[in-house]
Amino acid sequence: MAISFSSQALEAFHQLLALYPDKSAALIPVLHLAKREFKTITPEVMSYVAGLLDVPPTRVMDVVSFYTLFPREEEGRYVIQVCATLSCSLMGAGTIIDYLQKKLNIGIGETTADKRFTLKKVECLGSCGTAPVMQINDDYYENLTPARIDEILASLP
Amino acid sequence: MSEKYFLKHIDRPESNTLAFYLQQGGYRTWKRVLQEKSPEQIIEEVKRSGLRGRGGAGFPTGLKWSFVPRQSASPKYLVCNADESEPGTFKDRYLIEREPHLLLEGMAMAAYAIDSRQAFIYIRGEFAYGAQTLERAIHEATEAGLLGKNIQASGYDLQITVHRGAGAYICGEETGLLESLEGKRGWPRLKPPFPATKGAFGCPTVVNNVETLVNLPVILSLGADRYAAIGSNEKNTGPKLYCLSGHVNRPGLYEFPLGKNLQELIYQEAGGIRKGKKLKAVIPGGSSVPVLRADEIDVAMDFDALVSRGSMLGSAGVIVMDEDTCMVKALLNLATFYSHESCGQCTPCREGTMWMKKILSRIEHGQGRPEDLPLLEDIARHIQGRTICPLGDAAAMPAASFLKQFRQEFIEHIEQKKCPHSK
Image 1 (tube, rainbow over the protein chains, first blue to last red):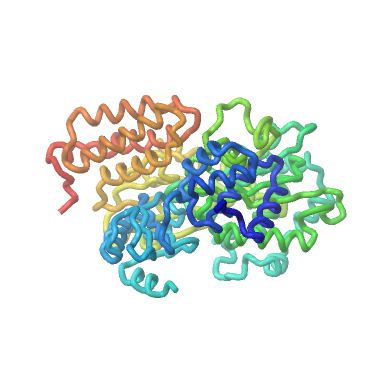
Image 2: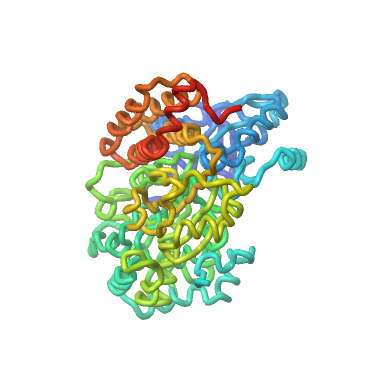
């Protein structure tokens, strides 16, 4: 069955188009919308978005593969992104990453068997004054310690 | 105590609401400017204020605006660069989340000065909360008649759109940012043409950093002369945010006039080095600038004094490293960052950053060879000045400076066939 945006997402799509002088410029915001709707940006989703914006599917693939925030493979319900760049690394990001790997029993880039968590090591999240830092879905968690991580993970619904 | 313009409300979580901002006298200057000043007068005032871009390059803001053609058949765009991703930098995120109306007021002034009716805020994709905060602030300001159509019955219209990026350091480079805004890969463009004549959607465009824009309400309310009196000299004016991270007792955001002494910043303001350790090294302006040794930090944090010291102010992201830090590991960390973030367009940067990472990794892991050090320097030399955008230079400069300033540590790794810091 062919995929399609919900009526709510379609409305958001039309509002987005009005913001840009050129239809194809809405590609990145539309991909954010598609991520919210479909979670994974599969080839099918790329073709659908290409159709919506009247651009070739290769253009969508070109963009999706360039950026880090458009997952092409299924991810867990909670995507944990741990910053590993210099300031976080100086403040112990390595320990945080090791702890998470052990606690979740997965490696970097992997997803737990119950599809609850995906663990990623990422570059600077722009929160160096409160290092070490991680982002779970849209939320930042700062000044991390193993004990804080236990609390945070236990608090997730 | 110097006066605070940006961190004044750091203890007031409601500082991001329109009601709070208006209570503090917010948008009063925007209304007055709209009634009393012509775009030319604003440009003149900003030129006289001495404001230099806070994104890293330090280019005079008024001069940048004056390159935009006065008459243009096509629309003109103002784009706010909120793609903050330079390692060590976290000032724009605070301004976005806590002072969004100060940013919008500054954007309104900049857009009016260049006669732009449509402006974009390009915010990095990870700042989802910041994007929401900005959307809400734009809505509030539009409802209040401070943005939108026929603002304050002046006949001037301004629409501001929040555009979220999707995870790519290169989009902080202004032409990479414009490509991304147009819905493409963030591949930087060859210059000329410069964005002032051919920027977003082929139209004249000004790209200004968040912190640059929040200085405009300060300049236009104080007046250029009083603003220019803040700072270390006539070429380095105005208030400045400093981001302190790494091994200090009190990391975080600090505001002082431009030209604050780096040693005072670390030892007095940020409480010195953690656990009573000694200082080894400081990167003063975000990861892309040359590193300083502990004996080189008695220097003013301004655009010119740091250049004389062999480094740069950059984004004022101060990364502090104590005596236990392994400088090979630190450089490997940065090389990994640049290799990951190189957009892949220019061969010297794409291949050079990857090889620097590989060579540094083998040195750190005890497999380095004596000839690796000249090889690394050779790679850095062959990247610098040979790429479309400054990412190549940004990767090469730390490498060259770490090797020069801390060469003995690299040699020890190679001679001992291990990292002397690892247990």
